[in-house]
Image (cartoon, rainbow, N blue to C red; front, top):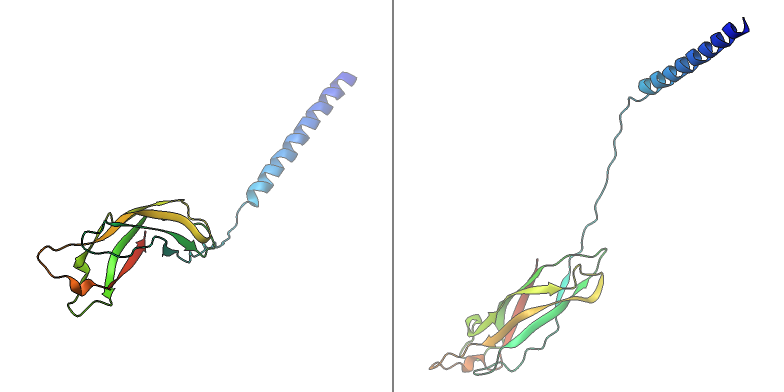
Length: 158
């Protein structure tokens, strides 16, 4: 008889484990329903300032083109990626009485490459360059109006 009762005890124990296990699964199933919500926010970049570090001076007829190059100020709060800096002539100031216009100058390679990506937070970081600016020598035309003129350049980062 003792053998029969051991078998019954083992069977009863297995049955109890199965019942408890199934009750746990059923309990987990019934308590898994629910709802919730949440939000997340991204930061805002502050934009970089484009600095021209090359010096352009004494442009005139027959003077070789001069390089345009520079770096960035990135006020943060994080690094930023800039792929191109594009230069253009924004205006001419200080022109003589004969007048001087933007088309008296030419920028070659206006879309310049950027190195040092991503641009770190800080001042004078990263680098750009590759364009040149020159005075356009119009043969047979008096260009004295451009003597002493200042070419204002505009830069756009993208």
